[in-house]
Amino acid sequence: MEPGSTVSAVRSSRVLCGTEIRPALIVIKEGKIHKILPDSSGSTGDTAAGCEVLDVGDRLVMPGIVDCHVHVNEPGRTTWEGFWTATRAAAAGGVTTIVDMPLNSIPPTTTLDNFHEKMAAASGKCFVDTAFWGGVIPGNQLELLPMIQAGVAGFKCFLMHSGVEEFPHVTDGDLHIAMKQLQGTGSVLLFHAERDIPLSSEEADPKEYSTFLKSRPDVMELEAIRTVTELCLQYQVHCHIVHLSSAQPLALIQAAKQAGAPLTVETTHHYLSLSAEHIPAGATQFKCCPPIRGVANQEQLWSALKSGQIDMVVSDHSPCTPDLKRLDSGDFTQAWGGISSLQFGLSLFWTSASKKGFTLPDVVRLLCQRTAQLCRLDNQKGSLVPGHDADLVIWDPEKEFEVKDTSIHHKNKLTPYLGLTLLGEVSVTIVRGRVVYKQGSFSPTPLGKHLLLPQGKTPGLPV
Image (cartoon, rainbow, N blue to C red; front, side, top):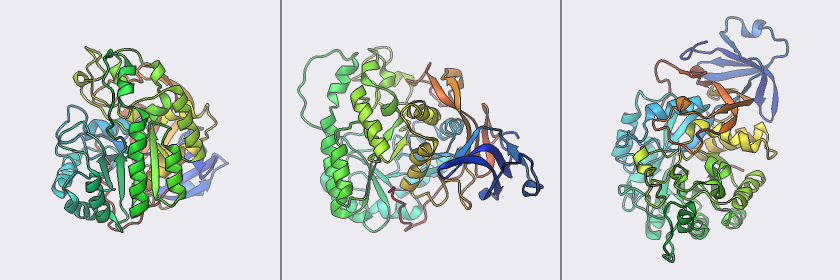
């Protein structure tokens, strides 16, 4: 069954249904999961009569990944990435839905007109389904409701400089205005939760990772998250902390949740997979904001993920052109902050999580279900249940592979994961019953669609 084909049924001896893995036949009709039948005989029988059955043997079948934190950068910065390359990379990694961030495209998705421009730029280029975040910046409060009505998944803001001039950060006053606009809409506000604090200026080698790490201390996240929790409790608007890197604010987050704040938090594959102690001098491909911290901090993030204090894991795929990484000088203070990982998220997570007592149902919960809930797509994405979109990833959790630049489908191949051996290889990705990726090949044409949220849909908060 070649890429681009329509699949009527998928059979495997290992289908992840709910919390159990069992032999099953997934019957697909009109792009939706029609029914999931027990399948112990290995014969097609009446259930698959007339069906084009994709038999994948003992490879694992589970819901496609929903990656709700991706910077595609189109229009405007297509030398950094673009919908064509980003969604091919997603498909190759078993990601069937991405949600595009409102920056670093030019223009950013901060007005209704800009949102329409973004959708036009994405049209006909997406190999997987794509939803869109809007942005909150100073003075755009009257654009928020029109963007909700047009179908954005929610909004993102920064509490300090975003790195690009066209997406300025908000003040506390801006936040109160935005929160009043969002009350009662069922929408969500995402926070890049770092705040500027006074730092002592001391001379240090800009090629040393420790120099950069000291410039973004944990307290920057702690103070920002203090602001977020207060706003969340006051307005009862769903707030979400993106890319938590420091474990220090976890107690603050937990206290706010227990006090009734509709608050969720994500961390990323790089904070769970990489550590400050192992970043070489000048290796600016490891730079991101907030920064990768130490091993002890990382273990606390894993513990918080296991206990449910952290709700989900995403890529925060944020590529740029090689020159912006300043590899020639190795200057961490001048390099662009962002890590490319969209294609490898599932394997990165499983490589570490499988050694820490996490199960395959945990993978679905943290990379599929909870992420779908955040962007309010959990009525159609993130679970293998009848009526949901037939978005499937078929992979071998036991198979190792090496990350090589020849197999990377992001536009720019620069990533800190080059040369690593990862566990869990994706073989087939299916979006709404169509094969979009199979063992290195893609559907001849993009088969993804835009996912626009119906106005007034209530969010499915993780519990």
